[in-house]
Length: 354
Ligand SMILES: NC(=O)c1ccc[n+]([C@@H]2O[C@H](COP(=O)([O-])OP(=O)(O)OC[C@H]3O[C@@H](n4cnc5c(N)ncnc54)[C@H](OP(=O)(O)O)[C@@H]3O)[C@@H](O)[C@H]2O)c1
Image (spheres, rainbow, N blue to C red):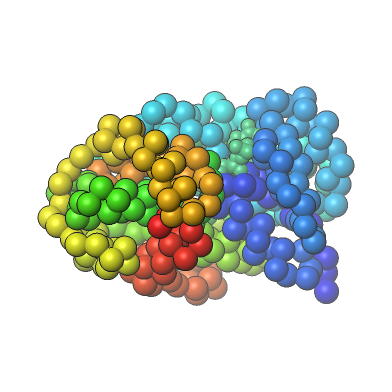
């Protein structure tokens, strides 16, 4: 069995954590995780704390990674206060990629593939209606978009080298990573739990059009499987793929089911700003943590309300085609409605929310 060494860049995020877990479950992978926070080492997994925006420190710390065969790049830094604007954070998000991949490439002569995680914002899904279902060959939207800077740099850097890249474009991750700016499951779970605590019915808080539009998501475990596939599939060399669960849904069909999970009544949607209306609920959350014996996550770590306003404000169809990934050999699919119910139940049973 050929031994492989992966560097997961952004290893504590809502994508990186799951890539680390997936690779660590396989006997032929050694995993090194990079982030500013220090992760907890375990069998076949070692973490390095490094600020990727410091080029000098990054080069110095990563010089020891000479055995690297694969890089999984899923680091991200939010900029601005509105999640729809995150794509504008070009300098920092390009620099973290440049600093980490250059340092690893310099140290590791056996590098085989760099898997870069970008997203559906490539198509301008955050700007308003776009051509659906979007295909990998669709033209870019008007920049700025840090994905363009990342892809252009990586493509130029790879030219003529023995390693190759693969780019994955997911949509609205469903997993749990305390401190992440972008994950919808904690938004739904904490919003529902607080509504219930206040004796309110569950109401969809987004725009009426978002309630009825087509939407799609990517489970974190699913993109981890896709990343593993993209790292080792010969056909994926220098290719981009949309990676979603592979199905579509409307929030209108899901919210009554979410109310069932939380054993609370359901009522018609009422549009609010989650950022505005949930800002004063930290003391209530702390009281709920004590009252229900929850895991002691700080309010600001457990949930990111700007992302909720962004997702539930998309009153247009958000839909990409996953045909290319399937044609190239990635056949996994996830039933998004069942996934949502399953993950919310898990949030309750694991005492993240009551
Ligand atoms: N989440 C989504 O719903 C979603 C949807 C579509 C596409 N995407 C894309 O997926 C990519 C990854 O996003 P994500 O949501 O997984 O991000 P995330 O959960 O916020 O994770 C980001 C990771 O990067 C690390 N990081 C940030 N700044 C760093 C720095 N200066 N030095 C070292 N590590 C740093 C963070 O750890 P520390 O804070 O400890 O440094 C964390 O491990 C992004 O390109 C994003 O646009 C995400």
